[in-house]
Length: 585
Image (cartoon, rainbow, N blue to C red; front, side):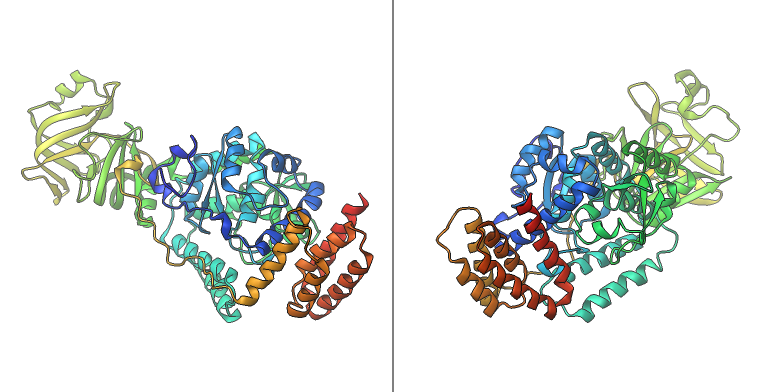
């Protein structure tokens, strides 16, 4: 078992290619300032969201063990999440969309373990533990929504991508990293944002992954539920953003009934959303998801599905009507009357049936690719897959026979039949030849020479999807990131500020009541005049103890901070108002 996480029955089911993205949470790396940021956001959110979020949210905080005062520990979360059939793992920021969704299919919540800087306390484009832990985790306590999330992952991880999708993913990941890195020049951030904008404007025909990411964005991340006139929040992006959760409830954000229109509505991760979609209930989310799935190559197959895999230049799978699955990098298709009559992969290829590799047909056998005709024999109405033993013998498709099979579309196979491979129901999946030649008209597509050649049996391509049929057929543990989270060494001044935050935390939690809060405030005021959050925490303690003199001095200082930095004025006011409101209640 990977040492990056604590084992449990749900995580034990994760395949190796998903485990490669998991990292230790390293809880001790969270600074006292990080803890204060978490506490501020959670206190503000729970107060506000209890009024505007779906009722499952507050219930979910309790059920999932999410604390208002402490950043969640993944091990503790998992002990509680397993009661609702889920688990959580820590990852380093953005991971590829297909992997993210596949985690969901296994009922595993992916949590970026980093936390936003105080400067980005309202919103960050980077996934962080506030977004994941305070946004995604509580709402999955609703069983209907949890099933939607799992089903979304199951379908979404099969969506076919384009090369540009991955380019955009890398650009967004890069922006999220530099925006959260301390001291990144503004012009570098602006250049990264421009890069994303340019990519988004030149994506061409959107891939399946791009379209289903739109659905994900407008539901899982930025979804509203209820009526257009009285919506409630359930999307994690809104639940975890103290800025956007307020903004989204104003008339400045257009509310639209949720529908398939969301599939074709693009989003900009760097800006507040101009419109949001409102689903009447969680069940309707599944209805739209299934409607979209009906448009995917996963369910439509055919020539279009094969072509999508070729264009993606990624590992994918074609499933034939017999259930035989061909996994590899597809690079060629020959069509006739709008249907594929010959398909070809390049490089390592594996054959499977019902997601299990066929014995003797792994990448060791098909190292240099695999090609096969698809369809019916010319002039014969009965497809090979529907032929019984007597039919096969009547058409000389029989062990030991040297035969020429001509398929629709002018594809011919000539060779001596060695054997056939059948499924448990007796249906033939493969016909194996020796001394075999495959042609299209006068062009030779393949000659087996002294080796055997196995022809796949299938009248049509019924499915095409991203990834292999059997995940064990390929070595998928190749994850390398071009960027990692940037963490600069802490200055002595920063370390001292963290010490002050820790002292006040210790006082509040009863760990050390010998600390002079007045001395901490004086040092903060003199040495860190721009820091506002610790002053708000000191004000909270002064008010609780009815220390009106210290509370007054802190208020006076915070007014100075607001004048010098108006951007944090509303954050200070909200923090003070929350203190006063709690004391009144």
